[in-house]
Length: 403
Image (cartoon, rainbow, N blue to C red; front, side, top):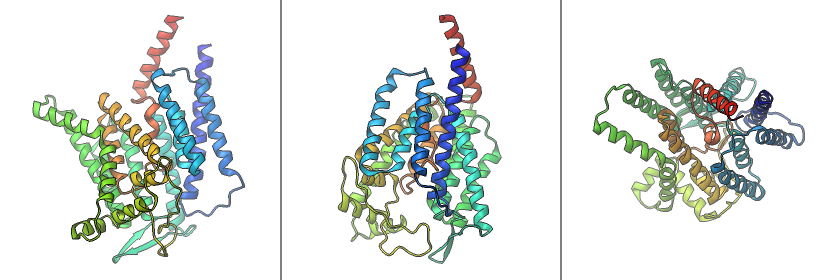
């Protein structure tokens, strides 16, 4: 009986991940790449039904329910269902399904499946663009050339590179070598040199520097009191990184003054994100469930938008489009992940989550299922594959003893 339950659980886990993969492929081809595909009618509805069926199977075959998570399950499902009904956004719906469905799946497995799939998709896209099979958008800004490599915009391509590198480091976090650090610096040089994506390049460099500090701290045999206090303070601050970043964005947009030379320079540095954010707050305000307003950006075509209006910051975008409760849910889950990583001394994962929070100040990729898989890990099993196997063996022995 035990073997049958384990087999059923394994099958449901793989089927759910396969359903997630199908939805990621669909969203990637539609919203990230320049592939022009005529999908059959109701393709989206069918794919959603497949992953929901996988979710139901997961819930029916997973016995490791934790009572303390039941309330959070209910809150997630309630908020995302209301949001989907009111605004029809698939991002929030996917977020709910993926987060709940990843319960008890090994985090390493989730990140590896996502990584292999997206490396394949991005590789196909780049090859297709360079070979002329799909359009390779090339933008010109202030005399600089920015290449999208088959995606809808250069910053989208750069974000994909950043998050894939984060996935790579997460999978190798217990066995990092010098080439892993150089790979991150090379990726930063590449996305800045060819895409002029300052935020993604800066996050890559910051991430590599942070990895070096973490390695230095972990390799020291004796930790002085001063270093220990610094690490503890940095860890505590890291837990609140999403809230700090969200408040920074919101207050910057609220207090922005177009007549101030200092504010104007800051706004120009961030490509008019402050003035556009303030305009978004003025037009749509802060509501419980957001407003499904149209956005006009420069992605998907090299022709400049006539009435450009696009909210790039993830925090402000989610606040205006999805509402206060969704932003609260996203930042809350990020903080929960940060706290758990800090408590388990998973410092590499904690630093990854901080980088994601910082990246969200400027880029809107935090909820995109084709870009960020780390928010799905809130109910998953964290730890290396070896640690997971040891934990499962211990649980099986305890269960047999109880019987």
